[in-house]
Length: 328
Image (cartoon, rainbow, N blue to C red; front, side):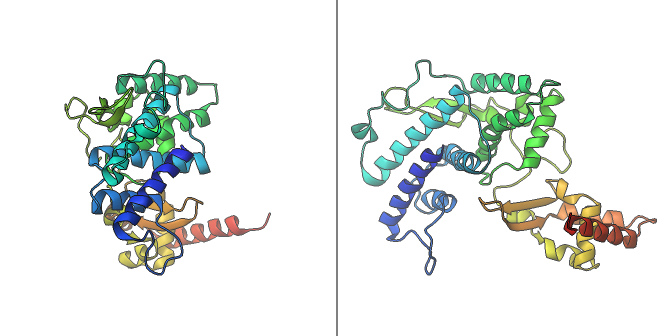
């Protein structure tokens, strides 16, 4: 996955450089990151098709997981990702440079499977069987299950335009959902809309994993705040939904910044994906934290209760901070 993502990044940069003559913003030291390259080639240059976006975004997220965390694929799931990626890579190479990938690498060579899967749903069903086996009581294999869930969750979110990797909270919620016996179509509604399509005029095993046009899968929509079952609450542009900066949260409630932090901690708003969003760098550093309108509503509702008192909340928050910073 590392090399696959790197290959796409280099191809995207070649395409952008050919069209624009540059692959960095004016005055910037570093070239565009992969995410920006994907957006430029799709939205600005119109070379990357919308149907191919989910697998490309999923590869980006899987690359990050492979580099900074853990990710695991079954043979079938890995083949679907890589074979789809090679198909998309070939299309881009032809569209941008009029070069045929099969003139360089024969389609019978990479990637080859003696028994290539023909049904995306069947592949996911087998994945779910393995994951549920890992989650049986007493086995203590939750981390192994998360490694297998991570690429599925990334692909599921990518179908709906999501660009950021799954959070640890979402992985925990997926594990809990499967332990409660929920079906994979309830947990990953986006995956139910994927199908394996043969690429037109393609060579051996040339396929693409894309969104089904048949409409047989369950409808994918944004979950309502607090709705059970769904894992993903984010729109493709989280800045619109989570527009209240962490430092502004208390100010908007009229209680000040520090007291706002204390109230958010007391109400556990950061544990609610519909209330809180955080974006981190690949190294794990926080780039942005934001609260949604739902977070403000929950805070106002709590403050409106007759017995509500901010003073003990602020004291408890201060004591908690002292414990966190105290030297052992």
